[in-house]
Image (cartoon, rainbow, N blue to C red):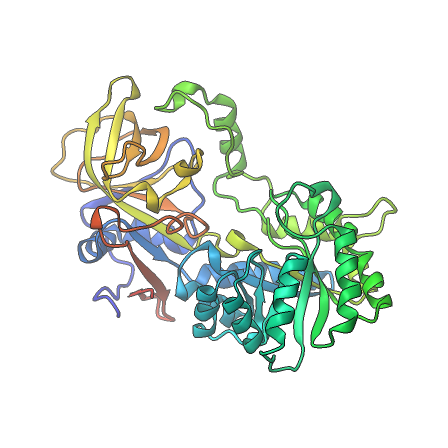
Length: 467
């Protein structure tokens, strides 16, 4: 349903946005303009829908897709991008991606159903999960989806399913997942020799069609993808010699997102000490929030990457007549959501400065549950009037549950003006594995509302519930 807040950018009344100090986030121009010129609208939305509140911005998905597609088109290669439904639970972001021209990367029967509901045709579905149930495989076959085969055992399951379920096209499209030699400890995929054995076995199963190969790597290095690509490439002529007709290499995801400016990020990492955290412990690892390159530059580096003989990835794709498939994950939803928490209470906390309690929990901002930190400062939206004089200080942010571990940031964040009850903390860029990955109804609190912000041609913002 539409909210009663169909607003043009309004004058600001009694609210003001305080910029972040140490790790200021990148924020999409449409979003920051709205926050700075209409913070009163945010207040009214929170009055209607509560805290925390997630607001998604579909225009960013189309922008991200178009930027990536322009890179691959510039190299003259055939490419198919798939929206990774697992990155969040937003139906409107998914629908926008499909309307823009992506396929859908599905890893469960539930994601498959949502993709179909969003208008995705079966031939634009790709199932990448490593442990597909029989029920999931059956529905994938009936929809005509492409299926990534993670193991010989999964292949045997699919062969049994194929005896009783028929694909609309007559043959089931599959990709075989390679586990590159340098990634031998991964739980994903098959070794090169195992893939070749499967290719030989599939010579006698005409109902399955080997359309190519897939690999899944951890981390965000374009170099590792280049190496994996050239590990995969010899399987193309091998498969063709066995009577198959592969035309796809799928490189999975791992394209980086820039949450904060690189110099700010590097400065923070080099200057942090155990005293920077209320736990007095620096986390062992972080997502690379301040990458030097964005997804488009990463794609360029990948396509220009070479094998030891100097052959580029882009040239190999063209020479072999191959289509590059990519599941960008969080980079397709870069800047696609903000998460808004209302401040409930602020209190001193000994040597740790202050603790800010918010209405909401770390299940809606979940990085601390992975023993890490979301290294991007929240924007502080506060009232201008009827307040005590500003007090500067450092504070960490806690949720409202009875769990001692319910902490949104262990990191001590510097504020020129410490938040007060009723203020808002707005985390930017939370659509990728952040805003709803672990959300639940602990203490019987309702799940946070997710709104969709849509800008009309007359520059009116309309907010609707995203379900």
